Length: 202
Image (tube, rainbow, N blue to C red; front, side, top):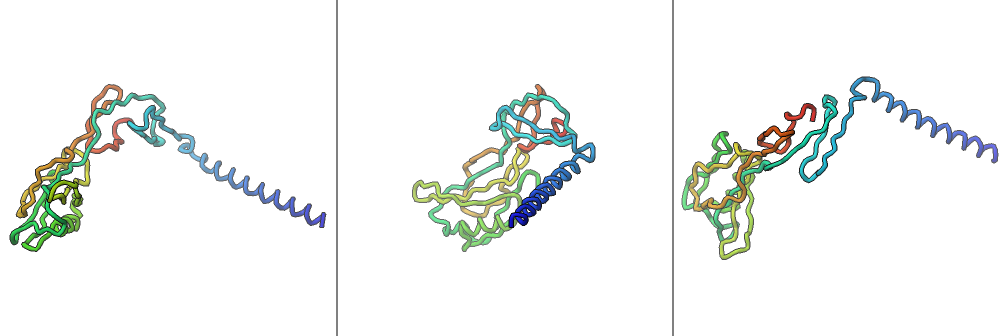
């Protein structure tokens, strides 16, 4: 039994050694090419302002970033109705909208179309706008249709081009806005908050 235990410990030691050698091999494999040595990390002095990652093409350096505005998606809301099941059209017609300079998107409405029906029809287009219904908790008509552009930036504003419903979109919840910022004193604007073409490799 003592001899057996001795062999078992030796076997376990060899097994552990084998695992460690395999780990070393994998680490060495990662360094077989020059790209294995070009691994950079980015540190931000304030992660609530910006975070970044670096590719192997990045150069070592330090940069100053000042953010004036972040990019925002356009968001508008219609005046309220009593319930989600409230009909919002008097007869046959259409509701059309456009995101930026994109194609005009259209859904049909009629005297049976409810607020919920219109929301579902808009979302069914998958056309760059998300429709939601919110209860603002006020008055007798608290249910409001909200249209939000799926893309940020001033060029992606939502425009209603045809409205054969009783809904009036009189509230802008959030304006379409580009990101504006400075890197090392140079000023930039971008439609997105993810930027990869200012600092090479970052």
